[in-house]
Image (tube, rainbow, N blue to C red; front, side, top):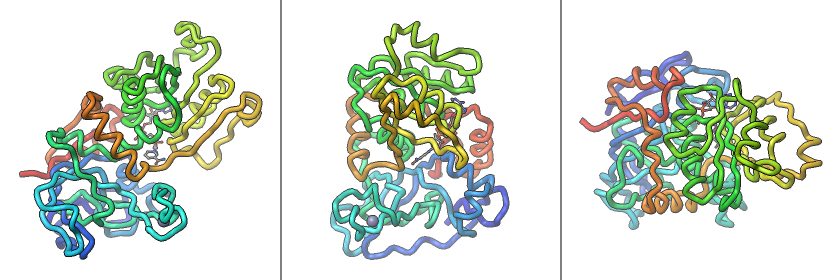
Length: 342
Ligand code: NAD
Ligand code: ZN
């Protein structure tokens, strides 16, 4: 089968013929219909220091996908050929204390599809049945292909109560923009989103952000006055991975404000701890998605009218993968879809 392979320990990705994956008794075989390119795939493409110490070479990469089940292992009774599915990319151990208690998203022994094990940028993917999510009938295939990053947005946004609250999102990348849509859907009052990239701020507006702020030319202090906010933001969603943005967020929260931290900040990041203490802030780290409460919420949010489709800005056939990666690298893209059907 055809697959996009990290074939060499240097920048780039290569379209190659690889053997069909072997189906185990607890697995399903999925014929891939659409995939999406994640920021993680860009780290792997660029072969940065994280990728160099994490990614085995050669390996098929990719983890955002939708496809159709074409075969199931002999132990599998809950899934059958013909079902349209995506998959949770974090394969957990199932045996640690957190897994045994049903807190699988907290497993310390996670293996990542397309990161530590064979990925989904391929005509076929084998996935353990425990990681398969069946979509509701009628789901748009492009939307289904981005359930993984949509899940990051949903899981982060739902960390704290949103109804009637003022929310600050730092970083209008695809995840920040989708989080803005989720916060509005969940009843937030003002959703303010920051970035340094005007193209991305426009995208966030399309997804329903009430106020976009280019922090190079506008001050959050002024935006708070404009919106008649008495003190500061109730909830913060850090989705830029930028240290300055994180510190800006800390300084604009209300007393008792709550921050969910998804963006991956540099190891040397300094934050103003005294503001955290004296303003009694809560900061919670967020990784991945909750298995499978986040997936349930995603499906029902879509069913109840949440529209995240505008975050999808580019479509290519998988043979045009280079154009897809270039679109991601340009900074002028939301989600980029690769089509694996003929
Ligand atoms: P992205 O890189 O596409 O978006 C980040 C955005 O932040 C960009 O638009 C960038 O212009 C903006 N930005 C840069 N400096 C800024 C500043 N000073 N103020 C405001 N915005 C600024 O990333 P994404 O795919 O949307 O993901 C968001 C973040 O979440 C990334 O840091 C990513 O690594 C991280 N992530 C974490 C998890 C997890 O499980 N914890 C999962 C997926 C992604
Ligand atoms: Zn575990």
